Image 1 (cartoon, rainbow, N blue to C red):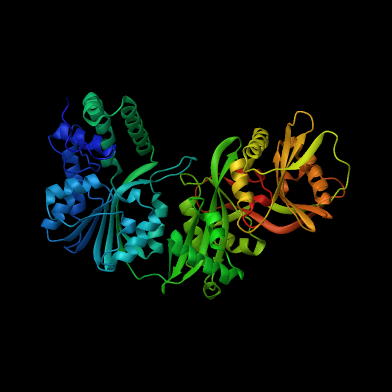
Image 2 (cartoon, rainbow, N blue to C red):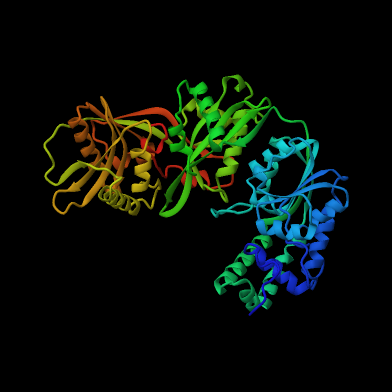
Length: 580
């Protein structure tokens, strides 16, 4: 039986990296990249060179937080040199290894985001290849909370340097990272490009894993597929370094004067309550706890808040995540919502003011190439659109929303189709909804369209905490083949929120919606529709079209698809808003 490796209990792939360094060098001190100077060097030599490069820049001994301790080598050296150091990591295996090595050294098993000891008293926070695992807003918010007035942040890590394709990135985007630091009052005092020296680490890993693949599979109980996936990842990283998409940096930030406003993420019950209080103040009516949860809870949405220096939340920019089909391929978009600023803080309309800080930070956090969402869509009126446009956040319009109205139609039942109300929460209702969405999706290769399957319809309409909608299915009388779904909000004017079906079925679906409206006592049916999709409804002469000054803006702040690629391509109806 193969003996267990000393670091076998580390998580994958750290267990692989630690073990191959042990096998190649006879021991392992670090888990980070090495700085190579010449071919043939061992990883241990290159790693020690990286450690010296960092060490020679550290300030004099001070109260230090080492975030992500690895094997505890840096922590041991800091303690020996007189730094009052605490090491933190969420990894239990790292705590065990460092504890066995360092004895009574101060170690805390925790995430950096949750660490709160001695706020305002730390002189140095050190992130050595741990920053990439921490949300950048949380990182600088934590640094702002923990550091003393003259404190520093050191980051030695990989970054994304160029974003020009719709692929999700695991690495932070360097320009956004530095801009965010400045919003928290941290000035960049040194930036060292270590990419050329760090890149050979990937070649060394590929070669070393190849030499020891059989032993790694035996000692660490790995499958051949895991080894292949690890090698593929390292080859991908090497290619991204070679073409300049990725880079390795040492960044040094010094705390300056605290700004008047600083950003933070709206997460958890406490901050949600702050957001809802601001909403009530700005819009004059309450947002219930259930409504906030419907929109943002369970990972559906995200929000960036702006807090004044006195701790008061004064601005917010939020968004709800949405599955979309972009010219037939799956992507994700966010639906922007709840941009608001307290009346007391609306005077600063520059790039230092709360509107800009909220919107720019949110866009950088959520939108564009490499981000969680490729596209964004929102429905501001002209007044709400103008300020972000002047600040350079938005550019032009990808659509203008029109209100279309039709007289309700009293007529005999159709000979070909019947209309019945359905519940998309039932198995039969969900099956019908999914069939309608599949027909719509298959006909929408020329559009960007939000998913309208049963899961979406159930959450958006059936589970709305404040409003009541009715969903109708139009199907053939013989064979019961679905023509499409109609989502209506009834009243004196009946609103058509959504029509879900094949593109060619839209005129017939509107006709049936007019019949349903009349049957429910409404005199008129109306809908909000993007101007570019109006021709697909073959509007009859009696239809009225009104411009309502609602502009769907294009993102101008983060790298992403060009405006001319997406303008006039969105399929948008009133149901795509968060407030209808």
